[in-house]
Length: 170
Image 1 (cartoon, rainbow, N blue to C red):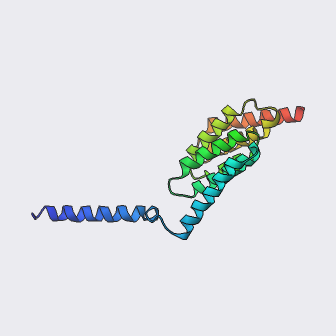
Image 2 (cartoon, helix red, strand yellow; image 1 turned 30 degrees about the horizontal axis):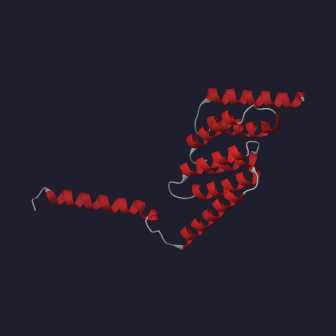
Image 3 (tube, rainbow, N blue to C red; image 1 turned 135 degrees about the vertical axis):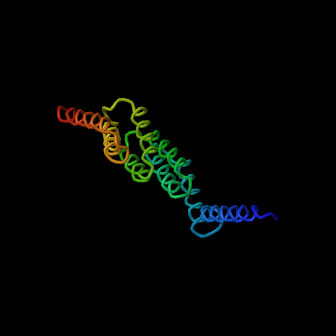
């Protein structure tokens, strides 16, 4: 070996050691915790398929999404499951609350999910009013907090106020 290649070999070895250390939680496919999560996810998927109506299907989808949100790299899958839950029961505020709690560490993902809910929920009147109110309130909190956009936060606060005024008029 030449003199200049020794530091290169050491650097490559250090890089591989750090890389293995970073991905070590994802490496072992065995273990009781991982097996338990996998079995719980299978059970949740079976409940999704066997759900008789939209409300119970949304609860089962939220359970599966909660499990996926706790795994490494499962946020995208959890977001998709929450979106399916919202589509199954667009009038539920519980789905919005569970998604907000589970995706709190990923504000951009939560923002996208809430905007999709507001776009797909239809009119913000009638039975979907409370779910729309919850989504707008969570978006306002996101824009006041981690996403820091005062203009959007004020606009959403005005939307919340208009929904409150309409509730008082009825």
